[in-house]
Image 1 (cartoon, each protein chain N blue to C red):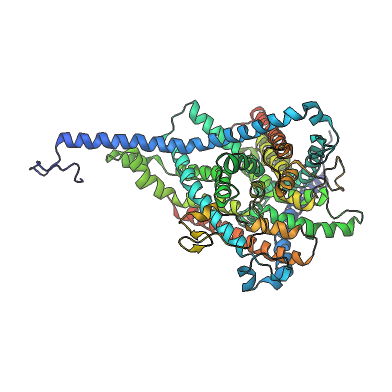
Image 2: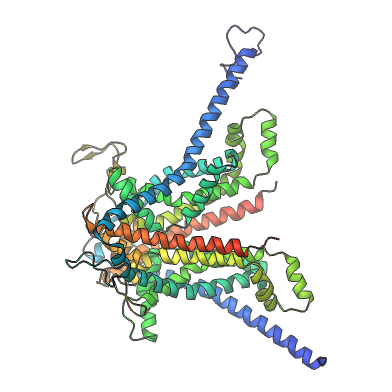
Length: 316
Length: 309
């Protein structure tokens, strides 16, 4: 016991009851304080969300005081910094959707195949070796991927497609796809490994091959997990910034052709941030309106993902 | 239906086996492709950047002449930003994880916090940059400083640290808590002397993975407006600067640049001489990130082998 509990008039050497109670009460008070501090730390995440919503909405409100929401959604030009200013967000959304589409065309098949292979075919040694490799791939900084897309992948693609310009949504999207593969592969694999062995054994007992079991038994049983991993991949693709800022050019361009350069929502924000726009100007406010659009798109996909998960969830 | 002859059955089986093997080959090919990308990426940067792997490259400031440019302000900036990030994110993240696992009651508040953390992990990093631009840079008046950048990245990696803390704590069996409380320990004493020490390797893994993510992040830092051309270092505490002696914490308010921004700057210049610099700096960044990840993977591997409850 410490000196607090051992009072001076105590001759027996044992702490007196009143002192012990006082000590316990103090300990209780300290416990309360600690719990409150820990709760405050947990609340920081909620404050972060509130902060994001507050910043994006308040700046966007001033933006939409200048620009009509119908113009914002239907105009086909995005020239916020010119004298003849147009604010058609579709221009940026088209770039975002095309690059994300290319990325997902790479990432979903490749990620799913790797996941099926690792979960159903590979022996444990291959799996132990493959997981860290995928993790390293997922850990590479996106700016390094951007460098790779612009200075390695684009020149290679230009050999195959001579008409490809130096900046294109195609090469940025392809590299983005490679970047997303680890996320999809590891989440999908987790979902498939959660399917109970008895279901596979049932299929094998009926004479199914491994591939038939994987495609017709395991994948349908794990479909909600697969959908969740695809949704995460989409969020990653839509929110990816540096690969596009480096390799896709930053020219606003309303196009659905991946062979062209185009700005995306994210690369537009980077472009404006690189310049020196005064705080409170309309140009400054555009990046918050663009950011709000981006957040709403990712939110939409997340809600869709949660709905899919709830709808197709299978519990074993 | 006519029964199949043995010959036909053999053919069906052979076809099934062929398809299995074909799929296996495709799977190995896809995995190999991922490996090839990593190897190609590293090889390209090593070969292109080999001229720059000198001591001068690490000790020179950025310059208009590619051959004399170095990454001194960038790597110092990255380290200092990481220091601020770690000091902010580790206590907050571990405390939040501890609260959710050991203290939180099942009520609406806990639900809100949990759903919120899940959703924050899916928010694009550039949105954190916009948050920081609005709140840290202008509302709090931190300006385009190391402090703003460090706090931004701290918020960004907070969900990673919280989730890994929770997983590490959840792996500790209930008997540890019961044993501790049975001998009269309070909840906090149980956490302080049992839960935290036992979950430390798992928490550390999460912290390292989070910091590895933060050190490679570019978009949020560009958004708060970090400069790309910095030819000075933040003031060292207690040394003479132009305006007097620097205080202990003056460096947190200093303008700065970080490795990813330096790479972005060199990559986007039309002069191919800067490509070499970008390659070399990219390799240095990759080496930092991959070694941090490797440590985390090793820790997790070791942990899985050693701990048997």
